[in-house]
Image (cartoon, rainbow, N blue to C red; front, side):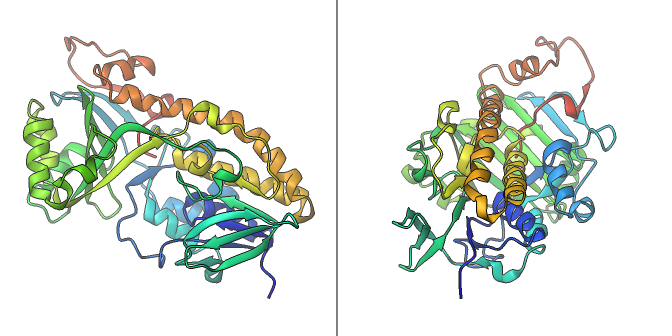
Length: 402
């Protein structure tokens, strides 16, 4: 049986979005995904906020917007606080045109997976490398030794450490300096009522002294609790904290956030279970221009990974929409033309995305959150002489979170 003309590496939001859009146009493809099954990981990350002009627009094109509306939270506000626990700004949606509804990453993935044929995803297919053959077709070699050959286009939608990127550029992501250590506060926690009263249905970002405590409501009502710290790149393997959650909490509370307000540190103190580590990497602006290579291209984090800026999943899904539209426009017989035009439009968009990612540096700078607030045009008195909470339309700033 002949293979489809297009191989997609990765069953994340960008890969599945591309698959859905191709499926709607009767263009065949196959997805290679390293996870064993769709449910191999119980936890697939936090919540994502989808923006009107990008993520939401893509779901409309994909015919999935109504289902997304049912699954997402449209009343999610984001509060920015300082290390003393004073909430400085409340970023809240004011109508659907301003809203950035939030959906759990695993729910978005399930929404997209359910919209394509189950047989189009090859689970437990960890890609080792992608190669160009003498006849100019592309081959995908798996770590189990199996080789799938004869593709006319391979799309790297496989994230920061893409196996397709080396075919178009030698650039590799660099460590940002930041770790997120994530735990959970379940609905069964005796402290749940207090957490809910503080955060509601949205997000809480306490920032200061180059650190952060960030909490986020999930679809099941639980909350994530993140300690955001500047740590050595290989901190996880150089310490034994991750193997001992109790020891890690003690270290966070007494060594990292000892002078922070109780309202902030209680989010770490009252979290339960183990921690997951998110080590943040990014490409530079100069890394997102490459000479076109027939037979391969990149979307999402594979093309322009950056620390969180609120745009990550939105940019990734929009990449896939752009590529799919051009493939449909030019047809399978002109894949190279479609990809060339896609990349021409991608590069400036990717640069803008990486620039937005640099906002992360301001969020976790020594003078945070004040310098970040000033940068996005929100004037909050550094001396805290004013009382009350500044209310700002959510559409006026870029948020941490994707």
